Image (tube, rainbow, N blue to C red):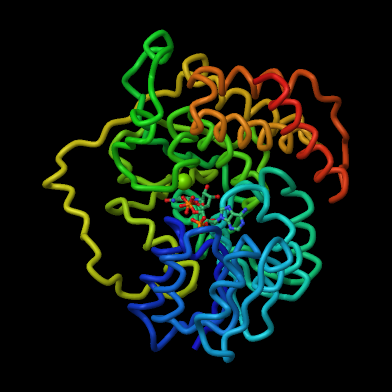
Length: 381
Ligand code: NDP
Ligand code: MG
């Protein structure tokens, strides 16, 4: 039995993680969860899974829920609550499925508490990959990818020697606007941007997919997870999201991982690693039915965010922190209908240009840069 704590239990990845746990209740047990503000769903999750520890975002919700359930369940709230869940004594694995760089501190604390980390929260690695990976190494902790592309690469690398990798090829579906030119993006709406062709995901990552920032964040995530320079990481447009990513080796041999798009495959593999368990209601891949797969070179002028992410990743230091914080603030403003779609790229670019890089930022410096960048973006809106 593996005991699991889950940050972001009410989100897209969170609820799919619950589905995996539900369907393998002989192997996984949920012991601690954190949620944001979706209290209705939280009630259902508590009733079904009976976790021992529950953290909510706001104190008012904490007071309400505490009065509704018996005292065998401990409730807590706020950012300290996130950390309490992350380091919960009984848990073996932390699934981090919270959205945004708020996931960084709980992840670092969980690493120090020697928890295995199943990481969906890519913003954590983008904003402070150097801190996370060095803490993981020092504590002998594994960071198992949940992002589908990184799970694909991780699966391709089983039994291989990392020194023989020549290149990672990360595939990108292209998001909601893949068939539109930059000019056609001027007046697109939030609802149009939220309509992803292949995946149903949380709002922020769906917008990131439309701007291609998601792929940029994933390139930086891959750099840290697989310890490879940016020159050895390529992005390939692949509309069908059937090949989830590939690894090319020194001898030109390429391994790919394929499957119908279903995040539960990646989530479950992180939990069951190194085993592949049966996937409840999983749809098998039928290539004969699909017939054709398409591939296209990336257009870095069309997808400016991807170019900016490569630049920030290569420059390193505190610049990826700026990239991430500026993007989080800009996407939130777009979702709140305060800026247009193309202003996201524009604001991120401005924040990167303004920043003076700190070469080796520690946690305090990361937090300060994150906060200052968000303030700068707000001042421009
Ligand atoms: P969602 O927006 O669907 O879920 C986010 C979760 O975090 C919710 O449970 C939300 O709570 C909670 N949350 C948000 N803000 C706070 C806060 N301030 N304090 C405490 N809890 C908070 O996001 P996704 O599931 O789509 O994504 C989560 C992470 O996984 C992201 O980093 C994303 O990039 C990554 N990812 C997602 C994929 C997907 O398919 N969705 C694929 C690959 C990676 P509530 O709803 O209760 O307010
Ligand atoms: Mg992904």
